Length: 204
Image 1 (cartoon, one colour):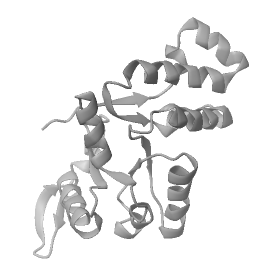
Image 2 (cartoon, rainbow, N blue to C red):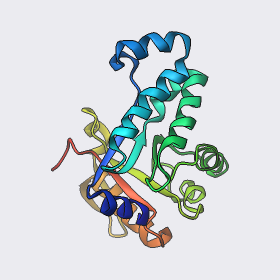
Image 3 (tube, helix red, strand yellow):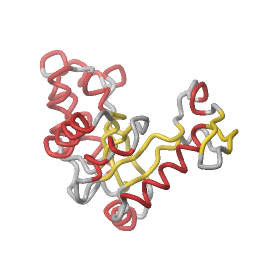
């Protein structure tokens, strides 16, 4: 959190730029390069964005899905992209992962140690113990799914839920999740390392 705020103050902005290389949107020259050197084309695409925006942003957010779709060259491009981002600008890996404790520990090691990202997006539905391996990493953070922006999110996230010690009910699931995230902040978060994913396309 402190690094995001420092970057925002230094660059006078709260802009987070996604680094999501979609080959169909590449310039023709990079599409041609991709046929011979897929990792190089992906890296060049991202490098141009980073060079054009590094004085404007408070964070970068590569989405893991785009890189996985290109196989090993995509993962190579993700690693190299993370290395190209100036060290003073935080990197949020949008992976939306989580699992039981020992698997979550492996995920945390992969994303934080191998790709050296600063924060990861997580699904909260396995509960607090699945978050701990990520939160145990000093200087790293998590962004927990609360209300997502996809059109059918409400199929589950708007469902009314009975919750709490008194059994009160009728709150949509995303509001219950917001309360859980707030509780986890109180329980685990001494360094501003927990945030919530709330889709900007659903302002209400």
